[in-house]
Length: 329
Image (cartoon, rainbow, N blue to C red):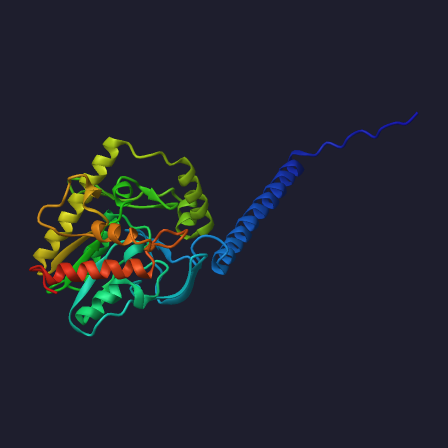
């Protein structure tokens, strides 16, 4: 007969040490795994195997995110492979002319010149054509609310007196302004009465992590895309009113600062009749439809941002509008 040895029962002190050791090992393993995952995902992004390569934006406390600063990087995806230079303010360097007051361009990735060489952006083309300096405030992913706040911040740093401000609206802005999180990152919202709702923090430590983690932002972006529901008609109407309100605020602020303001829209109907009061508008719709009928593509095959030909059309329409208006060219 085999006699089993009696099981040894750990004393309370030894059990506490055991569980403490197990907790330390588990926590350390989880922490190191997260660090390894973050580093691996950054390496994948920088190599151009997924997403925007490399990441162009970073956390910003008032705006949600902003362009990275003082970097020159290779931005590539299947549709394009271009060099991007960002200055000390995070503005993309898209050189124009050299004289007169600047032209300040405001907007999202279209204004930024996503996937296009700096010299081929409509920002650079307009600046060269008018021989005026350019300031590119375009930030990928910005809605009209963030664009407005970015313009106000720039105006406090560099007075807009005698400048020409050109804001390029895109179709997704009507959705973006109703959200407090986009692309996996928190963002501020502005109400129709002008009050600003700062974006919510998840608190420490998750808030600290989400400000710095590209992996978490990518995971949340994927979740957002999968769970996103079509915008209801009332929500879309509210978004259109908000965009119109914010554009009008931009125009009034520019006018008060002694600057001219020009609004560029993909087509007039985008705001469903909520056209901002007094804002001069460049409607790209007719020109885009005319060129598309010829079979020419103005956007990248997969990415759907404007390609160099699309930027040329935007520049041409802006210049034609300036030549035929009281806005200072």
